[in-house]
Length: 74
Image (cartoon, rainbow, N blue to C red; front, side):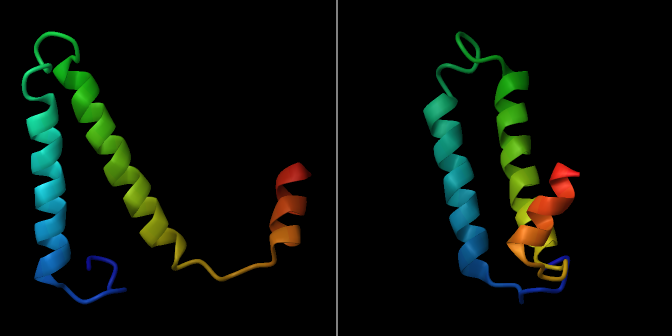
């Protein structure tokens, strides 16, 4: 929504909240013992960054895969 590619909808927001709640429930007992809080926050931040990259990548113009591969090998 911040990049003006999709309109705001409540269902995806609610689904994301349920997913985050599920992660919280799964890790609630093991946060203090086995998984450090910083590691858990790093995993959530990684997921957020990956989702943001997939949204931002849609704004770039499409290019042929052979051309992209050739640039990265040079």
